[in-house]
Image 1 (cartoon, one colour):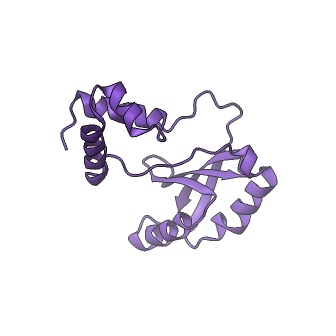
Image 2: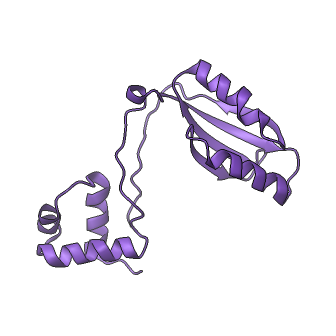
Length: 153
């Protein structure tokens, strides 16, 4: 779907405040409410807008400890990969799972309550998935930037 300047402005505003009222959104992009609503619905139908979420404070909900885990499989075969992927996508602790290049096969972003919970996840869940050869964990000490907003060019 080709995006024009108004679509881009709508996307930027919705990323900043997904609860913005349609009338306010329309005013900010220079449209009347009906055409603005149609544009938002078209962006949703095209899959440009995949959904709307509430961003939570991790500490407040018991998931303030974040770790990045590199996972290497025993073999790079479809069977090992499919088994691993099926197992990790079910886990609520795993916020992101990416197939990556380099020394690791996968990179996970994991959020749990604390170091003890992370250790339990690592030992009782992740390393018990058949085919996991080893893991390497990076724990951020300070988060300098955390956003879900994409650059809308």
